[in-house]
Image (cartoon, rainbow, N blue to C red):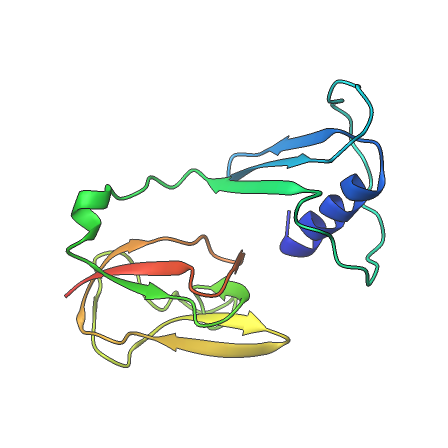
Length: 158
């Protein structure tokens, strides 16, 4: 399920009387709750996403949560690492193109200015470079997944 499909599903839930939609797959889990006035219990059914419209969704109407199976680094140990964060909103890619190798893997040593990934925003691919030299300890985002501004992408041990 890609970012656009998730957006369409959120819009669909906000415009209907569906109280809650749960989707789980081996890579992610999504739970979307509508602000339904009815007293109906959540229904498990397959629905087609509504077409995209230009009206924004109010945040208080829908709550969406996407989680990954990636194991988090304990807070105490992450203090020793430098976090590379996303400078923009877009789609995170570990490869320059589908037929190429990934830019970096866990355990790779990188220098300041080395390209770590690309983030596609509005059909432009922006290279994200390392701002320090060190070793990649953890990649915090799955390939081809949406990222937010200031979202942590990599942990680097200086």
